[in-house]
Amino acid sequence: MKKRTKKMVIAAVVLVLIASGAFAFRKPLAMLAFDIFLSDQVEHALEEKSYKPLEGDPTTPKAETIAVQTKPFSILLLGTDQREDEPARSDTMIYAVLRPKESKVLLVSIPRDTYTEIIGKGKKDKINHAFAFGGQQMAKDTTEALLDHTLDYYATINFIGLRDAVDELGGVELPIQKDIVNKGADHEKFTIKANQSIYNGTDALNYVRYREDSDFNRTKRQQVFLDQVAKKMMNLNQVTKIPQLLDIMGTNLQTNMQPKFIIDLGKQLLTGSEMEITSFTVMGESMRLNGISYDRADEKDLKFAQDLIDNWMNTSTPTYQLLMPEDQDKSQ
Image (cartoon, rainbow, N blue to C red; front, top):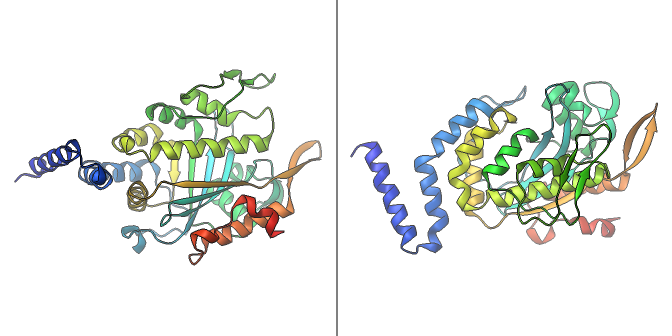
C-alpha cells in the first residue's frame, strides 16, 4: 500500500472512531492524527524558523528528547515588543518552571524596571536592558544571577507576532471589567472595551502593552494573558492549527528547545491532565538614580521567588507540597 493511501485509510479510521462516539479516546486519537499528518511539518518549521541555540548548547539531540518528560525543567520566557525604529528590549521576563508529569507551571515574573547587575556588562541597570545589550544569552545570565538558579532553556516571543496568532486561535478571554484607555501624550492611543466575551489579537496585544497604571499591574496582565493563551492552545480543537500558528509566528518565535523536544512535550501536555498555572511577581519599590526611575526588588519577595523555584524544580517534591504564592507569609 502506498504511503499516501495508507495515511488516508488511517485518517478515515480515526474519523469514524471519533464520529461513532469514541469520546473517551479522543485525546490519543487526536495525537495519532497529529503524528500522521502534522508532526514532520511542525518539526521542520521549528527547525527552519525558530530553533536558535545559544553558545554552549548541545548540537546533537539530548537523550531525553525522545522520552516522556518526567523531570521539572526551567525556561526563561522573554516577551519583546520591538518596533522597527526601536532597540530590542524584553518587556516581559518570566522564570518558568514546568512540571510536565503533573501538568503544572510556575511563572515567576520580574518587572522590566528591576534594578540589578547586568551580567557581562559590568554595571547595574534595568533588567530588561540585558536583552538589548546582549540578547538572550545576557538576559539568561542576568536572570540566573538575580534568582540564583540556572535556566535550562529560553523562549523569546515578539508580541507583534502574537496578534495574528491570537486571531487564528479565535481570540482569548480576558478579565477586563473597566475600559482600558491608553492616552499618555507620548503613548500609542488605544481603547479596550470592557466585558467582551472574547478579545481579538489587537486588543490582546494592547492588553499586555498597557502600562499607564504600573509596571507591576502590567506584569500581572502578562501572566493572565499567558494563562488564557495556554488554555486555548491546550484545547484539542486547536491541534490542526499548529502549522498555521507557527507560520504566523515565524521568526517572532525563537528558542533553544530542540524541535523534537517541543513536539513530544506538546503531545504529552495535550494528552495529560488540564494544565494549572501558578504565578508570582517579584515586587519592588520605586526609586530614582540620576533622574531615571528604577524598581528595587523587595528582598523578601526575591527570597521567596528563589524558594519557589527550588521547591518546584525538586523532582522529589510531591504535588501537595508545592509552594504557592499564598504560602509567602507562612515562610517568613
